[in-house]
Length: 321
Ligand SMILES: [Mn+2]
Image (tube, rainbow, N blue to C red; front, side, top):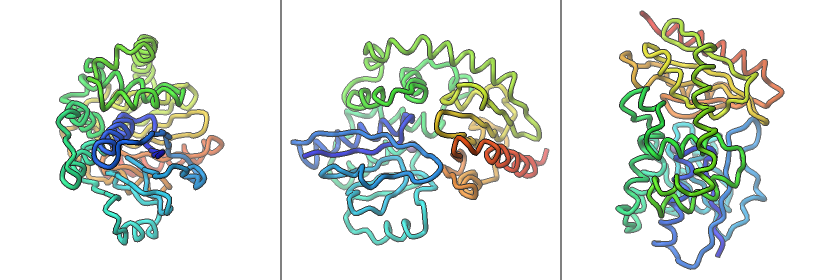
């Protein structure tokens, strides 16, 4: 029996969700299974390829809903979970008891742990460390911007590697370890340990670059690093550099997309009032109320820049100081 697990790629919670789902499935659904992992990324255009849903069961975790009959399990906690009202209606009518959605959860990992426990008798105690850190990382529950940027805890080093490493086999190799080993032990694995020093150096360089490139006005930071190979930078650096900010809007670029990242400062003394998922949805993106993103095709850099300008203006206009 082959179970294909689609997860939000380049995301700590996405990888942890895939790991926890696999452990849950093996312990509570059936033992004799082989898991095959496929990362999904937000991009301009179609997100899913029906022909990729080739497992005996196909699961999506921490990513948008698909109404394909081949998808048999789904867990998500993003506010923007449905690509269309038709998809939302399709989910509402689902009676399988295998598709679950709750945007109130800090991480999809903790959501899977709770559903597994309450509905399927799963014992989540052995994965308590994973669940706790998925909530901290995905819910931005760090005590300060400094602690979010300093990379002390093993989970933060793993997050940095998951977000920055381009080779798709890296996260797939890590997933089976995440729900079975302590996070500190995963750092010691040669395929992880070997990539950390250059990534830490790149992280420190990115702080210097963002210091030069970011500008804060009316509580809103704007920066453009599309000319640099920096996708996967730590998203808390802007708030570390501008502690009084409320929002940030950043433009970055990779081989297949130009990304507009829209976030709010988790340590701001002023409450953000704008729902950023809604703002991003207007441009075809999505996310959570306090952090979202929009992906443009790599040839649409001008449209991305225009969107970022409009969003910055909207956010600045909403801030009264
Ligand atoms: Mn998540």
